Length: 160
Image 1 (cartoon, rainbow, N blue to C red):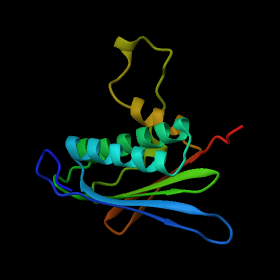
Image 2 (cartoon, helix red, strand yellow):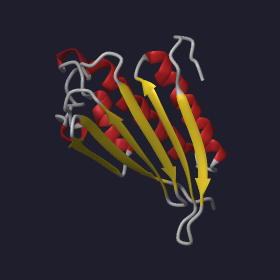
Image 3 (cartoon, rainbow, N blue to C red):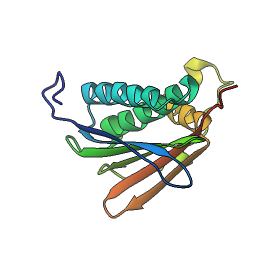
Image 4 (cartoon, rainbow, N blue to C red):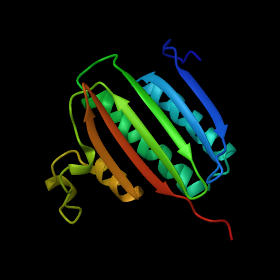
């Protein structure tokens, strides 16, 4: 798929079943820019809806994914670096992984934001990281060679 910015993006969705837990997977690679991120999150939302994920979990997963990729684009320090994304859906959770070649940064260790402080008195930044920590059940980071690996998990809501 070629986006409005002329960048080529590769998206692949597949379903697999194991004896223990049926899952569906989404895999993509992109250059983290605004258009590519928007295209990818739309594709992920469509994939999650097709996989039967509840709206809350699907929305949270796409928000977290968008924030992770926006941070790669804005703060990664490596223009035009590729990022790899994978999303897995199981009956109880949505898990995601972002691999990127940006500078080392662990979003799970980011400073706390004082939400009680006056907006004008607060330093700029950190709200997206706070959002990710609040929307996920788990958020983990590791440096693998020259790449960042960030994973997250969001529980699904059971249908009544």
